[in-house]
Length: 395
Image 1 (cartoon, helix red, strand yellow):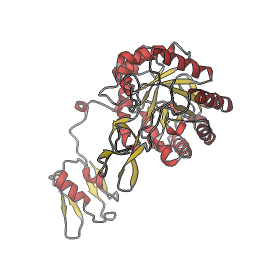
Image 2 (cartoon, rainbow, N blue to C red; image 1 turned 180 degrees about the horizontal axis):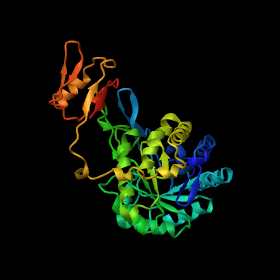
Image 3 (cartoon, rainbow, N blue to C red; image 1 turned 135 degrees about the horizontal axis):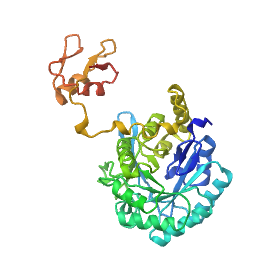
Image 4 (spheres, one colour; image 1 turned 60 degrees about the vertical axis):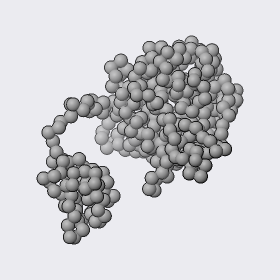
């Protein structure tokens, strides 16, 4: 393993920043062990509670567009459906058999006593870090999941209860189902959280079954609002990571980034905005644990090509380049340039500019688009839509 990928998170040294997220991919010993064998640095074991969840069938739905069937993913699962004792034995066995891998125990209680007891139990079996799940969007109780994460008082109360049961570093996993994440995040940190994890899934309805007139997945003609994940949520996740990392009172708090990471470039973007640990879930459900090979290889090559000594040196490097809208230079214009040798004459740029832009593209007799600079404002909508990358730009 390349030592350049080693990184510290909440005082714990990790062989690489890639962890399984608390989700269906990390729900038993056999699954997590296979991931460890393939090179994952750690795992957030699927959330455990004093109770075992009763799940529904079916429980998944996905949002598609064109040839991308897994653009977004909806999941009705709650916390682990296995008895607590089974999950504790699995975590203990994982730590015994893979002592160099990092086990983060995700827990969820219904009251202070349960949070404290769960913290004691996962500490006893050898977990390295505890993650408080304040953010699952499909729990059915107002003192569970994302309803907790929106309540600063409950976040603080349950964080304190967790810390009372363990001397391990404790993370608060934040919900994105709010306008601003800083207030509950600050409540967690003031109560003793060693780090923050963001984001959990987004409350959603992905589609309606037009035969049953109910949201998918349909369970006996009914369904519920549930968590949305996958590539489609990455922009929202990045925004929240940036919000947390750039807030002055949180700037030294370690962040675990979650939401839409599929490849090494996605991973690097989270790190550049302040995350020093990365959790991946939906991409594994789509492609399998083997994506760790691509993640490690991509980052390793990037570091070598850019002569960067340590991955940790990249954490937060993009934060200074995120500024308020009134600080942007509004005196520049970037014009598109159409490369005729690449253009296939599909007309998408012409239609998008004519119907959604500034009517700055004409269509000549040779079925080639031409830029009318006197009308062009440099929005580059045309470049975004070109299917063959035939539009470049210049000042």
